[in-house]
Image 1 (cartoon, rainbow, N blue to C red):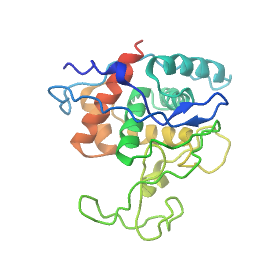
Image 2 (cartoon, rainbow, N blue to C red):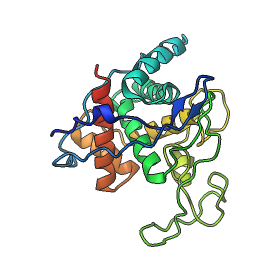
Image 3 (cartoon, helix red, strand yellow):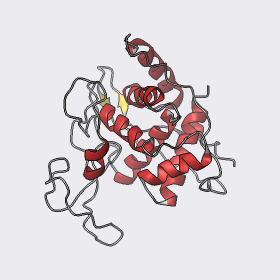
Length: 250
């Protein structure tokens, strides 16, 4: 399908790493040139990428995860701290939903598309994984081109007591967050949509929630449509995910 002459353009999911370890924004990348033709729903899946390490429930795998993230960051230009969140989500889904076959490029593709659509490329992600300033999407008040989604959380997650707004780096609606949210580090705290680890893990749970196999074209596209039902959105995520995978092959 000619999707990956774009791999060398990869720049951004959330930011880049400062020397002190803090994540800050990279320059906004030029849009990925659309392939001709654009990927069609159900026709293919993104290519395979360098897999995250194996999840070892009884032994810390943090060292292996960080080494993997550093290697992939050098290839893809996605920040290592952000990649660690995507890699951890892949690892946990591999253990918890082995038939799902979710891989990190899909999460990275969602992150990249959401950052560009929401124009929050200047966000800062700390070493603890939390956004320095809350990330919220537009008010979903039924304005032209915007769906109408009345408030579902009393403004607890999105700060708006009247209308819902998608929250966090992966832009999850409050009602969806309440259904699927999980704490990524297992410390018992409430899941935080502004934390990249929790956001990535929750997004993974949504994508794997229907029990489909994301290694198949039908399963991958069905999962993406469960996340966002717009065909153009799924195509944009596919293009980004395929490019990330091409930059970091197995």
